[in-house]
Image (cartoon, rainbow, N blue to C red; front, side, top):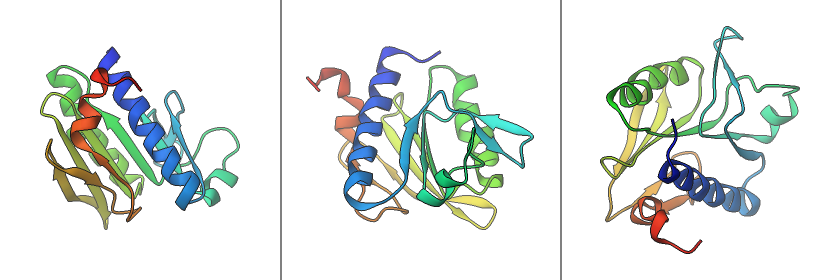
Amino acid sequence: MPTLLHQLIVDFLLDALKQYIRQHASGRALSAPLPVRLHQGRQYREPDIVYLCAERLQATEQYPDGADLVMEVVSDGEEARERDFVHKRDEYAKAGISEYWIVDPQEREIHVLTLDGDAYREHGVYTDQQEASSAMFADFHVNVREVFDVHNSDA
């Protein structure tokens, strides 16, 4: 179950991504709950944050078929860690989602994965002293410390 910190992180990242998209890209960034159809309609997931390019958005009537970028904030517990780091990683890769961010408050790390064939490779693992950057959007980056210290900000 998402905690207050989890939701504050989602809000921070969604705001940052929306601001970037307004200035540099087309499409929309949305937050859960929005079911995303994976594997030709047989499976759905609700990523914390999903980016849909303009073309995918126009082709969507009710629930999007896949996504272009997803972000998951890891919830507390080993089951949640395994779900985000293993199961969702495999599912999102099989669905052809180009970029997957795993935001880990416990370790204060952001893992940015990019699709390489039918599996993800690490674009980068970012910690407190760094800015996490997107492979899809060359100019999109977030300060890792600000992401995890969002509960201390006045935003």
